Length: 93
Image (cartoon, rainbow, N blue to C red; front, side):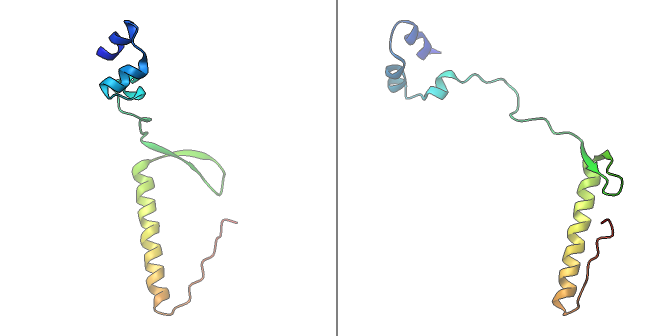
């Protein structure tokens, strides 16, 4: 990079940045050629509420479960809007 060459010749970093219009980040950043962040896994850890055991579940299975719960919630809201009382019991406790 040209800015680093001028700095090696004795020009102060701030002067080089002012002349070139670069930021310190631009000056020192080195791209790795890879995507940022952690690579996604194909599974999710699931803790069974009844047995407390951890198991791996595929992400597709988790998405399907979440979608079905959202649909159930929408259906419950529609029924409640009609004036019907709905009681939800948690049998796991």
